[in-house]
Length: 183
Image 1 (cartoon, rainbow, N blue to C red):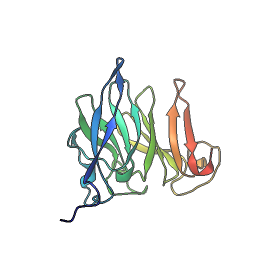
Image 2 (cartoon, rainbow, N blue to C red):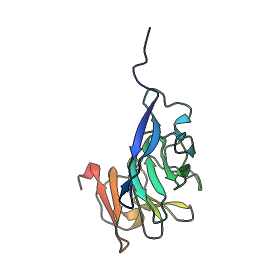
Image 3 (tube, rainbow, N blue to C red):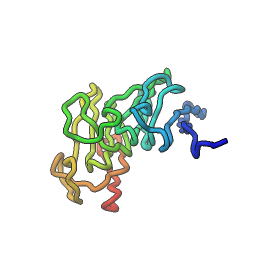
Image 4 (cartoon, rainbow, N blue to C red):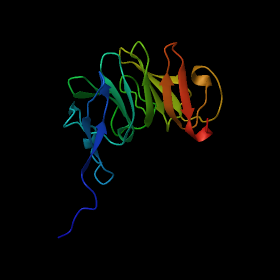
């Protein structure tokens, strides 16, 4: 009998601490052996939704969890009720030239939220910081898609090379770990 070299699904466990209590959310994700036909981006309840190499995770003040679903080139939301939806990007579509609202993200890696529940994603392969407003509008917040460098600047004047980590603070500042620039 021939056995498959890898399992069809792996469980990624998100373990938030809620009121001092650990709560595990199991998020099934596809392995590299079976990621065709967009199936890995299925929206639904947390037990039947599908992710593809989720990397970053952030929370909102309302209990929502946001996931940088890197392998699907999407940003996903998990509600307190366990419903999973795609809030930015289009599974299987990497890039940066599409019109809104399906503006794709290339490879979101790190993710953060601010006090008004805007989502910021370090889009590693587009070398940009993407912003998803609380009303769902996706824009390039900093950097220029496809242009790399190590330049301090505002908006499209900034340059990154593989931004991977991102954080916000209570004053509204955004911090980026720029992986390929080792910054």
